[in-house]
Length: 463
Image (cartoon, rainbow, N blue to C red; front, side, top):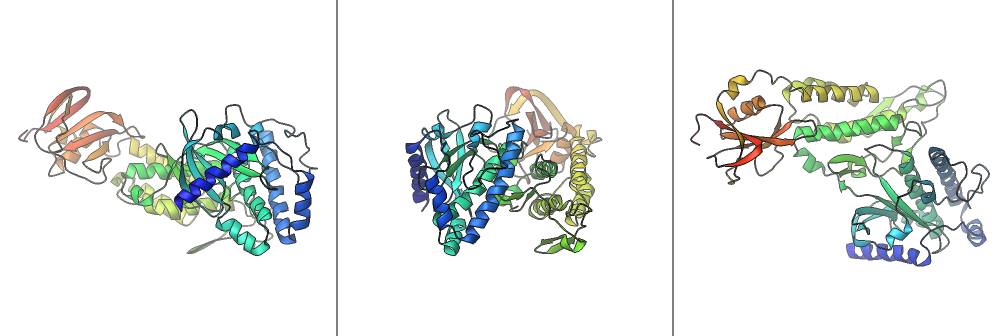
């Protein structure tokens, strides 16, 4: 099945490229006639609604790049929405990828598929690996639509608008926690509808089981980066944005940093209301009653939706387990404040920053010289790896005991309190918070020169 998906995906891309490498065709009269005669009213209305929504994103995109007219010189407010299409690769800065780059794609492999989209990875001519997204013709989104409306072309167009919306949003929103869009390719020569391929930064899917086994510092990093992202989304150029499909599978890790990779279900408008009863925020196990503002919107509902989802999908699993003792009270405040939505995103971000500052300060590890005096320091050496390790948890190296410390004093305390530890080595490698990565070992010491390391040997050991 995997091979079939990869093959069909590559063939689809190549068929598109056979007809064009610039992807710029306006919809013609034949296609418009097809839509007018074939689409059932319900499907047609949904297409019109999504297309009008898409125009809003395109208008914001054009304003973002100070472009007063579309590449086809069409007024957005007067255009026939069934005919309108912007090849937005024309509207982004030079250097982004386009249809031509797909001609040289190699090492294509399957990553995954969701309700609407199929995702492959491939290598472009300069050696970079990228992710490619396009509408999954055999996906449940199109299948359910076809079952209901009996119109594959109309249903494909409906699904394509999701991907077009995502492409537009990824050009408007700029934040380290949002996946980068490297380029896009548009075609409408195969069949009576436009086809879109989005070329994006390649990441690794979130694996919660692996994260749970990671050191607390790395788990905190994931949650902190998520909070920074949600703060940006609450104050984005498009207004407050809610991620409706908010689950770990919508996120990836790129070089160890968290990024949201799916934004096609994002909404940029807050719920309208006439009374407070219209502003309930429902989750499977909890319901929150919010206020209807004087402007007729459930003010803050998008921000609070994101924040509670962050609490139930990330904070609950990653924050409370095995944190340093000194930060536990602050973490408990975060869990309580986000779990009952007493905190907004500003309060949550400030609380996370307080935890980070305390953690980076060394917390209560300031008077451990009583431990360090029991160790002999050897500058300019490291220990030969003789596989004489012991394991500890949580370790950066699952085959040994590699922990982060604020200072040699803290490392000495850890080693002194572990029955098997006889030595520890501090090098130049640091974690994202600036803490020192330290290797704890047992057994005889075999030294080799290393100007960037110091070895600490327990004085009463047999080394």
